[in-house]
Image (cartoon, rainbow, N blue to C red):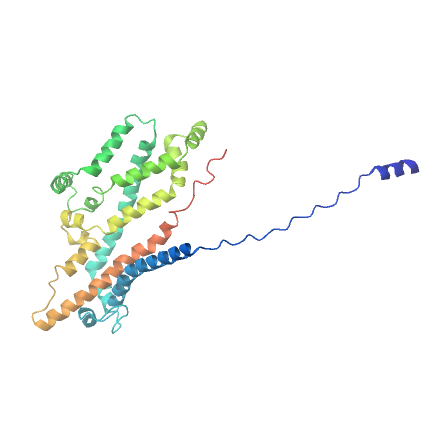
Length: 319
């Protein structure tokens, strides 16, 4: 037993020395050349100029909306309120026509965007599939509408024949589908949705509608955000269509109410002083109403913009 134990002890291999980890060398910082520095300075100067071009008018509008009517009409407001007051916002929020127009604009923007995005996806997704019969003919029809239009009078006659005049749908259905948005969605579906996902869904027994709802739409959030923002801003700023198709003031969007306040303002009194006061108040309400009509878009944009560069396709197909 003693010899066996000694033999086992002698035959046991000696532990190998631990390998030392190589020390990491600090990467040398790349030195910018003078040309690179001049280029970056030019970029910052150009971006700062663009920022001022956009920011200065916005600050002027906000400052004017917080100033007195006399200061606004006298042109004494630049980037800071003069004779600070909230009378402009009180007049805007206390005007029943403006509140009604604001509610109408929200309805047109929300419902119109939902209808437009739904119909755009329903057209663009089938056109993105290569097995669709007559696909090129349908794509040619979409492109044709980008180059040629029936014009205002034929469109008005179609809207009238459908019984949409002086209804909310007159601002939603005629502008429900944009050819440019259809092409954007079709290109996205073709380039960003791999065919392997469709084949896998077919093997699992999923129908086309199931694949569209469960796979395509969740992976298309950036696309949906972009086209929803396009349609939403277009509906929110809609003016000419409401001017043509609507007659009832309770259906007017906010932009048409703003037009009535600025262009067709007949609220002046009988004497010169009352007319001057009405003119000054109209000038102040113009800036206040611009701020009120811009705030919803500014509030919605940050929640939509986060999808623009989000890599939702990363890792969807492996191997």
